[in-house]
Amino acid sequence: GIQLQEKFPGLDPLTVRFTDLRRSVTELAGFADDPAKSSEPRLEAIQMAWREEFERMGAYARSHAWRPQFGSPESPAKRCQPTTLVADTRPPHGSPPPDCACDTDALMYRGACRNPACNWESPYAVRDENLAAEDACGHAWPGWWDLPVMDSKPYGKEADWLKEAKRRYPAGWIEAGGPIRTTRTPGATRHHYAPEWGGFDLGVIAKTGGRP
Image (cartoon, rainbow, N blue to C red; front, side):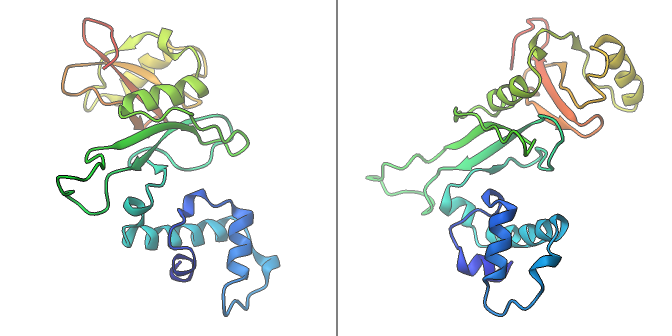
């Protein structure tokens, strides 16, 4: 990880395909292993070690690179599944001088797909992370906006709530990781990934039925 970060200081490790990563590793000074022994788990471990170094050195902020948003799923999926990406476009010099034209509050978001065979990424970069999540769900789960709105997930009764959601939603939708629409109150409207069923929990403001 350290060697790769030193050789490619401005490159986001998560944008590197395993085929390119394998070649980069074999070309590192002192590499003496057998390239034929490479495997996806080994390459993924190398990629994560490189990513740790990349983040530790603050390279994300300096590179303005797209990366999986904190809390969004990153693992590959066998079918189209949504996730969200974030890029920090704020200036690397902290508080800018008065004559600086940098945008001081610009975290940008995009929807993306976790299926390696698809590799879809939204062409739209937005400042609203909810819009990015909706865009990604629209790619992977078209028609989600017409589904019933569930009550907010009750603490301690998640299993019963999920059972009711499966009854009300299309057969197999939730088992396959589809999104669920839930009632929210103002101030708690963020869409988020829910590991309980492996899909997104998409908020709908109470009474109005509108999006957050």
